[in-house]
Image (tube, rainbow, N blue to C red):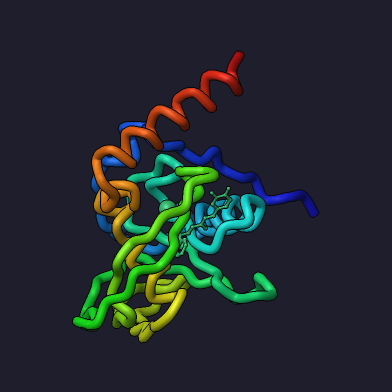
Length: 172
Ligand code: QAP
Ligand code: CO
């Protein structure tokens, strides 16, 4: 047994985070090989969600695990939002591509999403609370959107500067 290979995570403001992901034509061996690597990457980084966009794969694929025990992986392929509650709430979000930054974002409190699972079977997921927020956050990534884009331009610029400096320091 060897550890599943992890994938490097793109960091904001990397322009590749703004690419729009393409639908996956078939849940074949190629896709089945990516899923465990994305899960390993998410778990190693202590994340609750990871979109393929964040690992420079521009295809409609998301992994999520909001469970306390970190043992309930969810795989969403070609997710489509069927319904989002008109009721919204502002909650604190972070992102593996925006390390160390957390801020409030308004989201629907509940969603219904149709997606293929890791086996290529079509499923409907009805979510509320943290899972609903996480699904919306990750589906934004597939559209090239990062949560900091909901913040004021001033906050976003400060975050950009901070992360660019941190990146430079890490490479120095
Ligand atoms: C998206 O985010 C999310 O800054 C997933 O230093 C976040 O997994 C959905 C993380 C909040 C709903 C609510 C962030 C780990 C993980 C960091 C994540 C960090 C280490 C973020
Ligand atoms: Co994110």
